[in-house]
Image 1 (cartoon, rainbow, N blue to C red):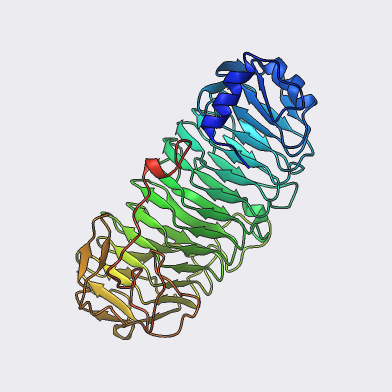
Image 2: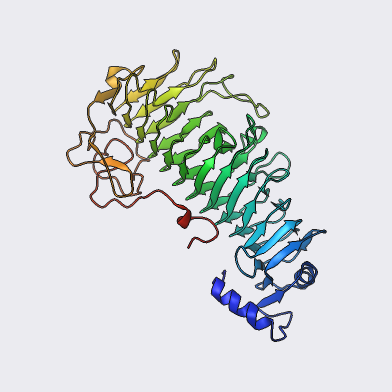
Length: 448
């Protein structure tokens, strides 16, 4: 268990006045060399604390003992300007509270299982990923990734050889201000690679905040299968949530402002999301350059059997769109969404797409390419709540108006339980709304 920062600080202060035996619960050191010596003799359960200040690791700081925590004396006060840690074949190691400035980065190799990376800051341009994870069961939480202008991602989930790292848990991180101006290669999170698209990562990406994620059109780029992307907030970013490659990922309950969702691949569920944008293309059904991607393909895969249901989509022009490509969406579903536009057709699906439409409520435009049987054109009576989210008002025609059976949609975007016949859109009408967009106070190194 990670002790409180106040307790750690008190222990570090005490150790500066008295001798602390090597087997103590907390061992405080003042330099990189003394840190290495402490790590070489560390025992499971120990917390090794490096003093505040600027540190340069000309040689990698090697962690070869399992079950230990390596921590900064105070979160954000211990800064590496070059070099950093090298993890060996260890398990249950926590790295906490450091700042990786300059060229300093961090990698978690495949043999470092069940590592936790928490409350660290990754600032500035790096050579490659700021943080790269190849091991299984790694928790990446309450970190801040910020202020990058060169090519490369903030967080790369990879894996050994042709395998994918499994069960990554990525939560309560702050991704801020990636301003790479190239056409590709500046994602905030890249989960997998195209050549690993068929591998089941079983990752969960939740409760993260993205602001100014402008380094790529993909803020969260999923290139693996069987993942969950939920309850994240993206604000004012070029980057979307993009299911670029892979299958069977669920995108649920995200709050997106001037961002959106695009997908390729098969059998995804895009449910309970709230997208509010001053642009068009809140949801993009990606057309493909091939019907089904092979294991080594980098081409866009046609979306097959993707369900987009119970979302609230507020935009202008074509709110739901499909992009270019020879292979059109096949056997997909657009159901029970509230779609509010400003003028023209709110849905624009390329000819040749096979999409089932049912139960949608649209307002502020026409159905566009959506057949009249797939929607009602009626004011959903959206009202803005205290947290700035448009919700259903009492008497909305979207209440109890959903069509079809979607048994896996048991809650809304709050998340609160849906009852009876579910309401259309991301919000199940309830007088006790609880959801609010994430702010900087909720994520990153200083959040609770």
